[in-house]
Amino acid sequence: MLKAYKYRIYPTEEQKFLMNKTFGCTRYVYNTCLYLRKWLREPDCQALNATILNMDKAYPHFFNHAVNHSYGFPKYKKRGGHQSFQCPGNTWEVNWEQSTLTIPKIADIPIVLSRPFEGKIKTVTISMTPTGKYFASILVDNERKLPGKPRVDENLTLGIDLGLKDFAITSSGLKIPAPRLLRQKIDRL
Image 1 (cartoon, rainbow, N blue to C red):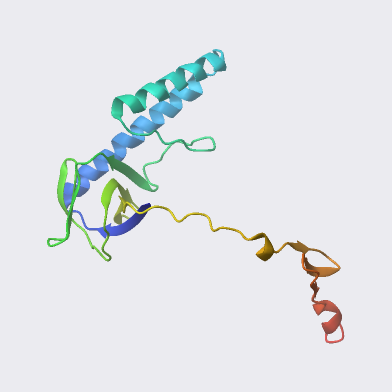
Image 2 (image 1 turned 60 degrees about the vertical axis):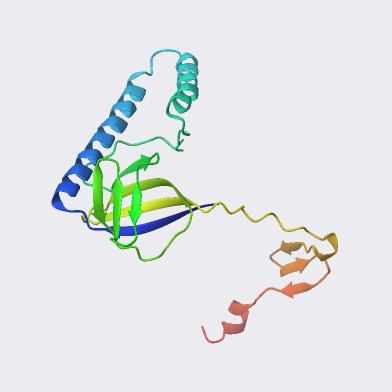
């Protein structure tokens, strides 16, 4: 089962410089891709969609990880808003004794490890709020299975119908009257 933990980090000025550079580069790549998508409106969209689907199939195989899909039309990322970048792969390390986090190209970032976690780290996401606070979200696979659906006994199943005349009527025949607050308080009003 995957579980995420978010921690406050306190990078040095050099580490902030590298993180801000990464924020800018990821924003540039995102905005360039969005620009190209807007610009390519004239050709047949089915042909372009087929090309994108082929790229989407080839890209994960090449990088050996899944591609995230977002819903809704994307907007350009701005410099002043919330910034983030992900560090997928296996080149991060949490040092519990020193309270540091190491990600690709940035080592020993001071981190407040407010709660422990167990399991294999899947992804680290570094983010910066508009107020300049830095955070690290660590996605961990604790190798536990998700709890299964509970077995439903038909004899214990209850149906509830919500209505206007009666607040609710259950499948067992129990009627719960609607609260008549207005009628009860009309004299006070």
